[in-house]
Length: 246
Image (cartoon, rainbow, N blue to C red):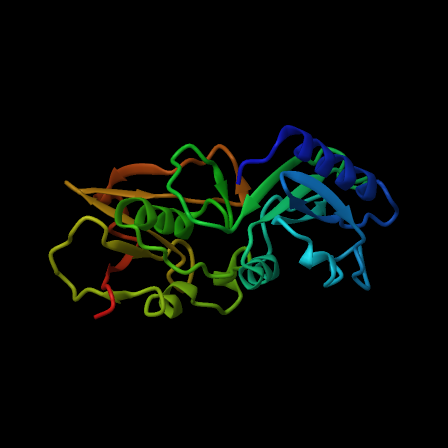
């Protein structure tokens, strides 16, 4: 979502003030009528999470829920994503430095809302990653809103198989080996993982579009890219096609 400069500055100031406490605490608030409204964090342990009083969530004109990650990470947790989906409004997260992480860059990022395809955004797990790119592609080119999937960073090392489990609910079916591909088909790949943990879109003419992460959940220098599918054949575990409901 678009954020007014004054609102962004107010969010960061609130997050910075609470990140300077010992121990650091998460800030919380809402965006309403384009303004940031700081609220009390009523979580039992404010150094590990946030909670808002229900009465505050009934504030008229709420456009987003805001909280902070003191010292990072600069991406949402799986819990953040589940809560955002349950709320039905976008979330904003402020990242502010702490005494133990003084070099942590300050920033505000958002997630949730209608997906969009933006090839200028660097990698951010859960926000601008391989599945986010697929959602943006289908929203932009087909007007189809694929469901989001809450996911912790490096879920593929935690016994989860989110791509395999999520194909059906998202409307995809695996193609038989050797099937002819059509633009919009999705490749499924294993990258140093026991399960499918990466995917992208077949564009035709031998090209795929995907957004590959790396060693951390936030790498701004890693942009989406088009490249020959041939380079990925050794990683590709199969292909899937979206099938609209009958």
